Image (cartoon, rainbow, N blue to C red; front, side, top):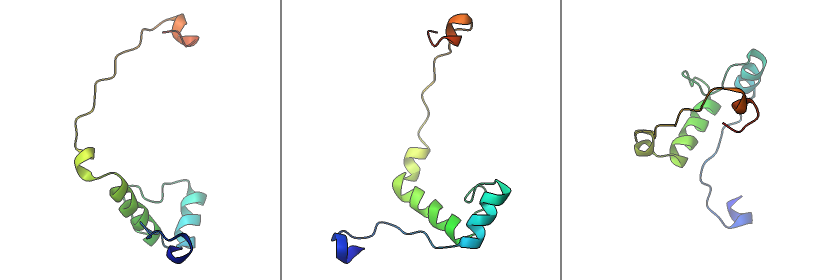
Length: 77
């Protein structure tokens, strides 16, 4: 990839077919609370590269409450 595109590889995910197919069949996330698979650890590491930890710790903005009622049903409230 590096030779063909001329761009350094930013990250990679290991081919862990057994863990990925198990996660699909069971319906649970591959890299949830327990990243026991190689692919899950690689995806978590890639996510940490893309979103540094200091931005995760930043306080979230308060989302204004929406008004209840029929108008909300039609997307106006």
